[in-house]
Image (cartoon, rainbow over all chains, first blue to last red; front, side, top):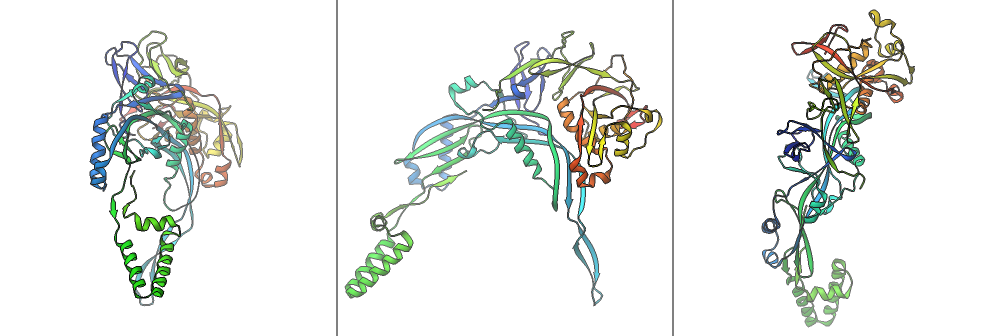
Length: 324
Length: 208
């Protein structure tokens, strides 16, 4: 199991702060030497991680990202910062022992030495008889998964393993006063199922059939709220969101307008072609017009609006740049 | 939201003498050596848990969950020790041959250096089906208890199956029909002598 991250909690006996490692059940107050157990209702302890960067720094990180993500500098200059909100996103952290048994039927390979007509030896691999295997399972699990829909935020897991981050016992009220706190929509049972399913995927190669009864025991379950900045930028009448990791400033998810290109060649060429054809002969002009309309219909569709845009809209914006 | 997740910090104090109980990071049951009392957290409160000490020679006391059990499989039901010995393919030796009543499953409540060792300890004791007397004296120290009864029940299923002969475990039909029903668990400590890192129980001639 990983080293875990430590939380600062007050001792109910003497009021002194004491260190508590996420993933542990108990700690010791260094001041009064009282052993303390951390117990959450339903067996779940809830923690939050302090943000390390403020709104101004988050904006700077977003601007830095603009410079490196291929956004047109002229478009980037026009982007107006609209606002920012600190959000705390909940993640399940499960440490447990996957215990049970597994029966596997695996294919085997048999190596045979073959001598051909010329007397040359070679090794040939053949499929051998299937092998049945039973194994007792006792494997540690360290799983983290979002307790909400992460698609809008781009953060699919928090690096609990080996991280040295300060955890705080969750104070929902105090946190809600200065940030938007998301409550978990995924239950502990679902998180357990996910952890087990992730473990079950790790089957040995060559497995043909598998039967298993595996369950989690010695479980230590925690909900950790992770901070992110949700920023918005505006360009014209469009709003672009950016999600910045409030611990390390990484851009988790962003959408920016693509660069603009001046598109002169195609409409100019069409006008030139049609006018030259009409100048030569009206029949050639009509034939060229028919050919042009056929090409236009196959590429842009048959609407009049599309035809008007082809000749009138000479500045074209490329697709938005998406990240995360 | 599915769960209410308020967190409480509970001081681990002996309900008898009021002293702070020694507690490792992952301990779930806490033992007061002075009062010889065990407590665990139930619904956010400290509750007493019965803990027995079994007789024997040795300075290291390992905690075990002991469950009476019954096995149902495609080969029939196992309800007695002789029936269990047939299932496990072991021969009774010495006075244990006459042991009656339901067979007992031993699940370590402490952690071992590796999980295979943990399963091995439970498997060897279960295969032995020992008859052990209760020791009334206070033990000096007990290895930390890190598995609760519900955890031991889950682990017990794989330990129980680990005691069954290899031929049966390769048979898919046998495994499909295999189910072990565990009775009420009792927590007990068994003494082992430390022999240079290996633990030895003279009465059972068992080395872990």
